[in-house]
Picture 1 (cartoon, helix red, strand yellow):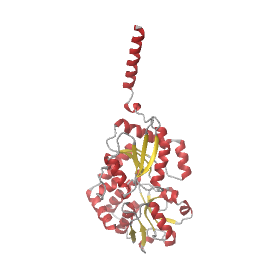
Picture 2 (cartoon, one colour; picture 1 turned 90 degrees about the horizontal axis):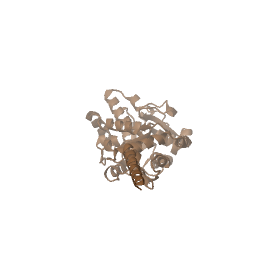
Picture 3 (tube, rainbow, N blue to C red; picture 1 turned 180 degrees about the horizontal axis):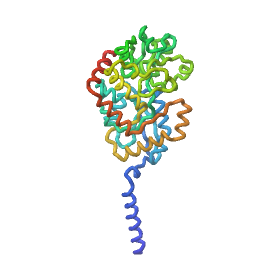
Picture 4 (cartoon, helix red, strand yellow; picture 1 turned 45 degrees about the vertical axis):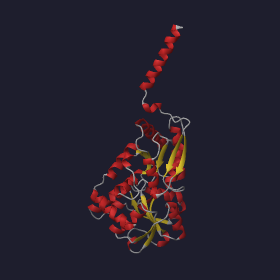
Length: 341
């Protein structure tokens, strides 16, 4: 009897010792829980596509294999979702989000509605470094950015953001003649407006979004990209210049670098601020496993999506670089943005 008692105590002590030796992240489990993945755009666009893609695979790589559901929370170019994530979302790992990669950029500009500190969010990773493009419909006859200097073009945009900024910046620096029409709820609505002939083009859209949402337009060259905004050219449109290539002086180079930086964290995923370090470790590890998954990569290929991921630590550094851009550059870009609205 005494031997059994001593044995039981030893077993308990051994279990406690092993548990204490394990990292805290190894003791986390989402078994029986539901994780909400909030998408900061309406259904049907590129962010929604990537959000649902990750949702289909993420649960397999989180401990306990929870159910992952997608919840769309559109509005204000994604700022509604990020503000909710920053101020109200639970910090227990049951909520993460994907949203417009320009959130740290909007914060740096002091844009109305940016009631968050992007550097304090829990950055999990990003899926792509695909550039944004300023594009026009083939029937306009415009083929290059130089052509866009010769005639007015009506560009569809949402209530703000890069759809407004890019055409306004090009007008102010290289002499294009874009007329910006705002008020569309998202990229899908702008695509429809182009199809109906309401506008001549889109002020901003990741090149991947065109390939996914209007593959026929890309295949038949019905949509014509004029400039790429980012640090990397897309191989499909290697002849289209980067915005950085258009800089005429050092001030413009600084402005264009600031504007182009968010594209390097395209399709980002983040949690609310203040998540426990062990939860951050779990999510970053799961994200890194997701983007390496053969099943996800097969789906990426089938959907014709771009995959050029960045880990959470790299995304966090880029975000910090964006929000600490020199005031002189920020002020110049902000003045152009305000004028373009």
